[in-house]
Structure formats: structure tokens, C-alpha cells
Length: 108
Image (tube, rainbow, N blue to C red):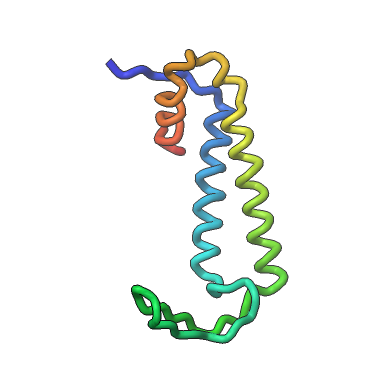
């Protein structure tokens, strides 16, 4: 029978926010130009596959600040979740299973 864990509410909330921040960061990065700095486009077919990129206007200062803010929050939440006091209560051999279950908990 599969083991169930009684995750504390703050750990569940931290994991949920971590999922949300990662989704927001991923969506933002997909919308932004491919290069942080303004660069000309290029085409290179000398490698094992052709690589082409259009010119990139770069990111604005506001876009760079938003990415930095989300990355910082992602880091804070990852540390909070991975270092939470709950993990000390879980037998070492079960921690990987517990962490996996936390990541896939409904609402997370």
C-alpha cells in the first residue's frame, strides 16, 4: 500500500506557490526576445543542423527586473520547501517518495 504523508499547510502552500512562480517565469521567458541584449539575427548552417535566429531587440530594464524578481522568489521557495522542518520527521529512506508526492499533490 502506498504511503501517505500529512504535509503541513505551510509546506503545501510553499510548494503551490513554487509551481505558480515557475509557471509564470516560464510563460514570461517564452514571451521575451531570445536574447537579453540587443543583437543582430544570424544564420549558421556549418554545424550538424542549421541554426537561425532573428534580430533581437533585447529585454527592457522592466523585463529584466521582472525575470530577476521571479527567479529570486523561485529560489527562496525552493529553499523553503527543500529545507522545511517536515523532512526531518520523514525516515530518510522515504524522503524521495514523500518529496515526489508533495510535488504531485492536488492543488500543487
